[in-house]
Length: 405
Image 1: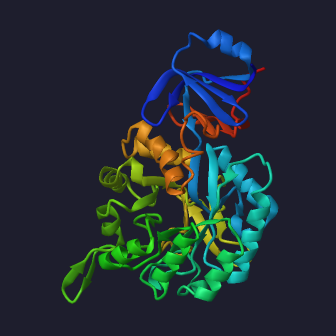
Image 2: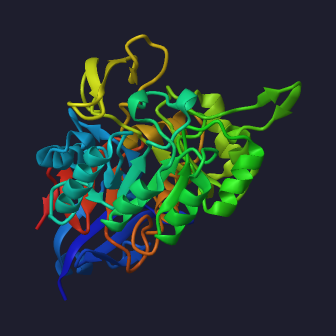
Image 3: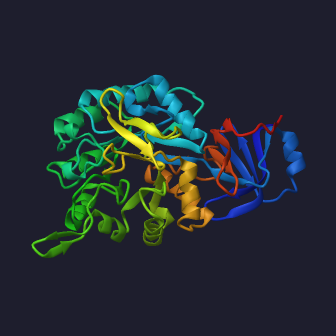
């Protein structure tokens, strides 16, 4: 029997342990077997069409980014076919094998155009990270928590609008909104009914409103700490905000921008300590400036976006009053959790692979090195420098060419 691909001489990161000198056998885009002994290696090399020597590096599940706006000079809301593919290719160079393209608050017609283009791009076999569904961020947000979202588009949930959009496609897998707005609970219930993840975001909700949101189907919190309420004081009484609610409520999963800018090491450590790796997804929230140099850039589409400045490793509004999305890549997130938050490698990788897969309900096919799952794999060294990115058993990025046929 000839296997399509063999990866050997690496530290295989499984859900529960790291296997030294592990061997990964791949065929027809799926993981066939994981071996923890090099005894069978000579025979396996003869049986494999292509072999990769991992050279002692980590063999990890491919990184899954469930909140990403762009990169490499492109934004998904440019509504440009080539741009979609360039974003996927740029992030693949940093270990991402699957992503949920994310929108910004916009007019309905702009969103419909993005959806149509996503559906077109998701169908092709391209040399980048796979698209696993669309994430709609906005426009149903609290105005004073809009962050870098364009104010002219912020509005309450409009039933006719979101029902029309959702009925037109099956590609939407997640929608972020502020649950305290009029109509937001009904919106959450409608999302859940249509197998779309309702996520709490850009919100001034307090604890009781978060509890009501949970009952309506909201089970995830978008970029924890960013554009959301903390402890609020009204008439001398203190109320827990979304931040405290997310940390307190075990059934809420969260995501964090671990770029080292949006959250300092102390907060990264706190979230990890309280929520644990099974309830935290690492996200880039990357905008078009990811993978580019410092200077002026644009958040959102070129036609309707807002100007931002990239400096100090993050995107900022021109007046420096707030961050405007990150320029992070997935490898940086893992590196920061290991180095800044002092998280074990196994847990840092889980938050970039298995946990986001579970949140997006694709853990039955992605996010872990388990027999039968998609062969989405990232190989990296101790400094989380990427040497290979493999999607469905196909090498789409390699730092150096050491494949043996």
